[in-house]
Length: 603
Image (tube, rainbow, N blue to C red):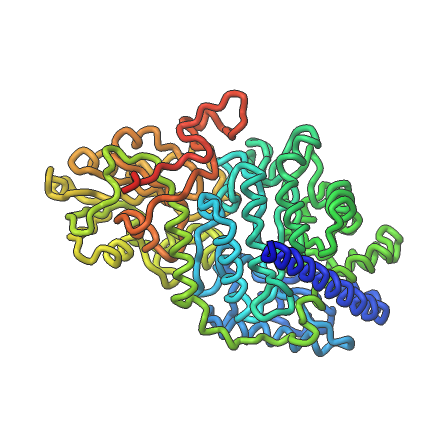
């Protein structure tokens, strides 16, 4: 009983301390705001791309720029080593501190599964794999490690987590979702506590971003870009849509998330970046969100009016506080100033936006520590961090089939390891790794699936052949075969996929290998895919999702050092004709249900 009372008192004290810190930061922000000119205020509301800032650093000083970002794959021009990132950020900060009021800038980056733009960083499984773990404590620790690595490069803001509830696997961002239910996404919002820590000003803490508000995972196929699904329309009764998509954001606000990013998509036909009822009304007024709202990449351009000045007015009046205008910053600044001059945007709305931004900068301690603290830079990609990533891989695996208890494999067996994904860090990491869409190859240090097998079972007789010929597949030549196949890397837009088929070459490989050898198929994918043709052929099938750099986590389970604990975060369809298919549907007939996952028998 005493422990419970002590814990309650500790939590209460923590909440009070955080509230006090917020009130103090807000008071400082208000005092600074009172000294600012309109151009200085407008500059705080503008975020530009790193490339612009590197080409002309004086832009930061001359226009009082409040924020800089790196888009996917946007790395320093001199190189992609951690110290080069820190040096670049330091240079930008010095330009910000050269302004009259010396307001530090806030650098943002898409660190969505580790510090994934940076060479040598620890790359964790994408969110779909983390959702399979059902382990919010582990996910919180992943947030903490990611924050440590981001902080060490001088960056204090990540555009993560994606709290979307993904309802259709054909969406190219499905792997950025923790799963198809609001309960699962809400559970995994614990990553925010990992990112932001107890106090944002603490060493190793970074600002989190809950995205994409609201309903980006519920868009209807055919309403999106080029008639697909990404950036499409989420349709239905408001109450039902809110019940499905809002809960993770409620949890994020309760956890004190510092920023929220609206979605490119629409809500019953209205672009989210123009949706005042949801942003200003629900998020800021009903949920009492005290952070700031940042637009997505050039997203206000999509508001369907002809005048850019009007687009800006609609978006700011809807509740946007900072506008991500990677390149066209001069036009954006001009539009903001013209709108204030004409009265289309009130000075009160400008002041509210800037107050929110400055408050978070004070909470982050940027006014006291603007330049990068690189004292922990050697921890980027460290063995301690990779150990947690390896654990996450092991816990994310979902065993879909295990005929005659084929798995676990003996560590002294003769094993054929084959398939397109057996020895490729880029393929097993997926999109948002070093580049926006991702790419194949040895793009960053890590352990491939093949290397992990050899590491965990050094006494096994392993033969690696990506695509074996017929002569290599004589019966009884191998005890087992492990076939790693899956999707090629992609991100939004390019990842929209109507059929979700595996490559024909991969399906042929499964047919040929499994006809001669007991085989395990490892699916390296960002979502459920069509396995109807290979499932009857394989003796065992494992969903490995997109595991990131620590492929040895797969071997930890395959050889029995750990049991399977992962369960499906999304329903696995029999046919794409069933999509969208989600738990609770009136006609729910999946191949494998949401929450399914086999385990090894107890010893």
